[in-house]
Length: 471
Image 1 (cartoon, helix red, strand yellow):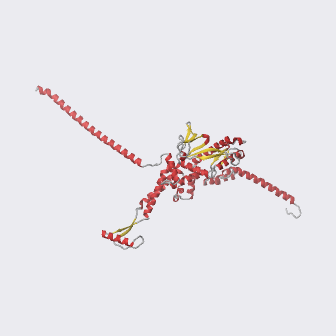
Image 2 (cartoon, helix red, strand yellow):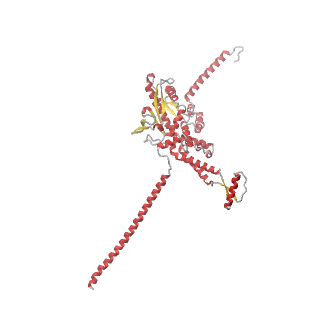
Image 3 (tube, one colour):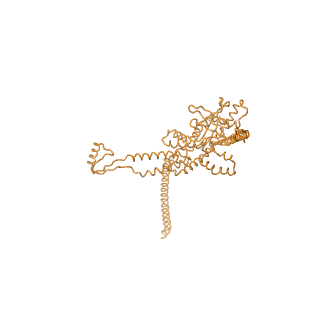
């Protein structure tokens, strides 16, 4: 009995230990199940992530993500070598170039009088004439800048006499598409371009131009990267492709609508064979009368998706218009133009959308004149009595819109009539009018009128009171 009592506490301890072991085994089992479930969730997440990556890789909102690829695509579309987007790319490039140039380049003297800068003005006119920049070449270069997003001109002194000058400076366009040139900027000043050069490509030999030998301007991209200059069209090339594809889809649907399929419904295969034989014998086509058993109708496609295509075409055109500044009716959607006033307002928008580019072009032409004039001075100084001064000239590209004329009519002319501002100030604002030339013409006319009045007065004095003469 004493032995049993002495063993009982130990038996109770063993049972308690077994109970604790069982609880721990249960906890371990539950933890193992939790780990398995956790692993399954991780695997599911990985599968979902991979699936999402696959979907994202298959669909892109932008198909043109590098500068070389985009420039080549724009060039191919403009030259009608691409499968999609040729029509609208050509329209946008040509119209933007035309809007940017406006009424052309105008030289303005910075001196008090025009006579003080007469030689510099004459040289600029002859320089632009030599390089056809006063004709079609200005538009061609503007078009190239729209395609490539940047402009590079090489300056070369030509010893051949031109008009009254002993020589002239040639400005030659450098195509990035052909030369693949690289510009080096000062690390402390990103806008200070020090060299422009290219390695041998095809028939083009390697060359490096110093800062006095070239003019380089960007129309896109970041300031800190002198070589990346994304064209305006690069932002919406994908949308241009989609617009063209939607138009093609609409054409395919129209083709199907124009080809309805006759459908004959009969009850047995014997009737089918008999009907087919009869139609083959008579060579039946639409327009011929038929008599048969069964039901006849013309089958066509469901046109419910057409409105979706039309909505996509209109939306895509609006997005392209917003990205490029070209009004939607210039892109072909005349039905979206509500009235003439809306059309005038959209023209104002495209002028505003090209303001930045116009300012860059003004800077490009001023830099071109400065460097070309300095090169001319350095090479023709022996034949010059006085060197030309580029600081006497600045450039402007006037904007002539309906708003310009409205401002003249409703604000400036009434202000001049009320003597609030001078008539000369109004004359300076009239597009295509040289106020100084007009002032000289008015002065010449006043002198001529005064001389004519004097002659008439002398004639009256000489003939007054003489017999047979009428005063």
